Amino acid sequence: MNLRLINSASEEKLKKLVAQPSFLCCQIFNEDLVGVHNQHINLTLNKPIYAGQAILDLSKRLMYEFHYKVMKPQYGDKINLLFTDTDSLCYEILTDDVYEDMKPIKDLFDTSNYGSFNKTKHLFSSKYKKVVGKFKDELGGVPLKEFVGLRPKMYSLLYNQTSTEGITCEKEKKVAKGISKTEIKQTLRHEMYKKCLNEETTTTNSMTCIRSKNHELFMDTVVKKGLCSFDDKRYWKNPIESYAYGHYKIDTY
Image (cartoon, rainbow, N blue to C red; front, side, top):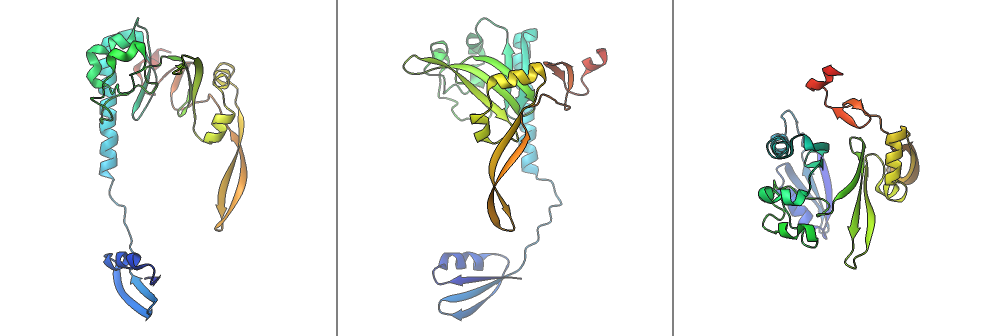
């Protein structure tokens, strides 16, 4: 049984506790203090969470259909999948103008972030803005210069970004699971990802974080392995090409 003490300043909290299905009784101590008895609630998680499973399955179907029914028929051997996640795809496409190629399949994309670039003005539309199931260019029409993928959740993107004043500068987007955002921003660079891939090196990163022990908060410095190109979740044909385990081409190597 749970006993919660409520003072006169917490009237709304008292109403919520009394309205709960686990409510048993109240005990009034004085005009400013009341005790609320609630029964312990035990949840038995003996069934799968169908909604979450269904969402992931629908996402997988959408991703597979886009890759195998749209992109592969359109480009054939001129397209390489660099990486994919639950809701994203990154491609290397050998074509003269990928934005012209998008015209026939424009309805598959949310192009609401394409307004300010000359090459993508003709694709701009807010019709599918934030519509579920539509793909969106994460860089907003800016071509990707370089991609370095080391392992799942550890990659770097390099691209040029032009300001409203016409000044072009290089930008990086870096992802490294297990490393704090501050450490990624201040320490990691795109060239470090390339060096890790080409020379098979690793980095060591230190992070300062807030931890709790016996309900006491304290600052702690953690030193752990950072960038690393070792990946045992896929079969690697060479340092930059891989297949999922079970792929029919693996037997030929």
